[in-house]
Length: 79
Image (cartoon, rainbow, N blue to C red):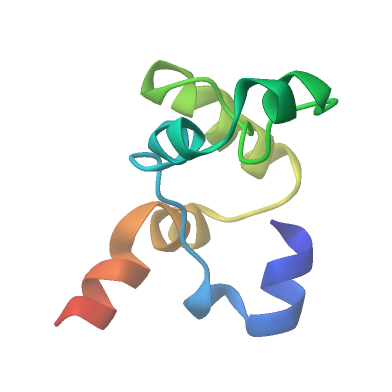
């Protein structure tokens, strides 16, 4: 997250939690088994979103920045 924020600025960062697992149905079981970790496995489901937020807070992200990452950036672009 920090790297992307550095590259693009906080107003251009967002996360989506709804598609990652769906992508893996297109990857063979052998390829998945050979991966040291699954790509996109930052958090395990929506129930763990508070852990991500806590991590962002611990890294110095302000409430407004976290709100942007969690959705207000998307809303701004969609408008």
